[in-house]
Image (cartoon, rainbow, N blue to C red; front, side, top):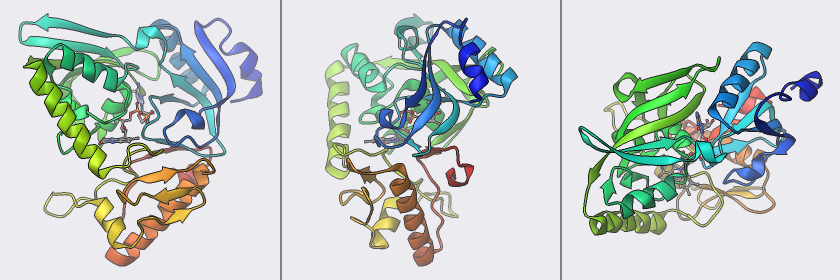
Length: 315
Ligand SMILES: Cc1cc2nc3c(=O)[nH]c(=O)nc-3n(C[C@H](O)[C@H](O)[C@H](O)COP(=O)(O)OP(=O)(O)OC[C@H]3O[C@@H](n4cnc5c(N)ncnc54)[C@H](O)[C@@H]3O)c2cc1C
C-alpha cells in the first residue's frame, strides 16, 4: 500500500487499523507474513465505504475468515486485509418463515458455535459442517463440506458487497456452486440465510458426534493444518478420486520440507510445526504435485488458498 495513503486513507472511517499486521499467525497453519494493513470495520456502512475507497484508489483488498483454508506467504500481501470480527458481523438470528425455520448468519459468525446452537434448538441444516473450522463467509466462498454434505445444501440466500460497496442479494439457485468453490462475483459475503428443519435434538447431537468421531479417526485434527491441501481430482466419469490416496501411493506420507510435513494419518493434510515457514508449505506442495504427476499423470490443484505479493506462487 503506497505510504502516502497510510495517514489519510482510513482517518474518517469507523474502522480499527493495524499497519504491517502479522496475519500469517492468524491462520490455522500459523505461518506467514504481514499485510500492509489489517482493517476491522465497525459497521457494514464503514465496510461499504472502505470497499469503494479501495476500488477508487486501486488498493487491493482481501477478506480473512477464520484462516482455516489459507496460507499467507512469508513475504506477506499487499494492500489491505479485512477481518469481519466486530460484534455486528458475528451475529446469528433464528426466525420462522412460511416454509419453516430459518437462520440468518452474518459472515463473521463462527460455524462451530452456530452449529452447536442449532443442535441445542433442535434444528437440522448445518450438521454436515461438523468438524469444519470456518466463518460463514469462508464456508460459503469455499462451498465447504465433504462426504456428509456441504454448506450450500441448506443455503437460501447470500448477501454480498460489491467492489464499489453496493449491497447485492443472490438467491441460492442463481449462484453456481462447484466442488469446494462458489462462483460469487462480489468480493465480500456479508450475510446468508439457511432453511432449517425441526428435529429431535438428541438425534442431531448424535449425528454431529458421529461425524466428529469419523473425522478424528482419519484426520490429524489436533495438528496445525488447513485441512486438505489439494482438491480431489475429477475423473472422466464425473466422480472424484482421493488426492490423499494419490499422495500416499507416491510414498509421500511423512515426507517433509523444513517444518512442513505430510501427515502420516491423512496424506492430503500438510501439517506445520513451530519452526515451519510458508515457503516450506509452498515447496512441499510443489514437490507433491510433481511426484504425483510423474507417477500418475494426474495434476493436483490447490484446495488451500495462497496469498502472496509474489503472484507466481498463487496457483
Ligand atoms: C482441521 C481442518 C479440517 C478441515 N476440514 C474440511 C472439510 O472437511 N471440508 C472442507 O470443505 N474444508 C475443510 N477445511 C478447510 C476450511 O475449514 C474450510 O475451507 C472453511 O470454509 C474455511 O473458512 P474460513 O472462514 O476459515 O476461511 P479462510 O480460510 O479465512 O478463507 C478462505 C477463502 O474464503 C474467503 N473468505 C473468507 N471470508 C469471506 C467473506 N466474508 N467474503 C468473501 N470471501 C471470504 C477468503 O478470502 C479466502 O479466499 C478444514 C480445515 C481444517 C484446519
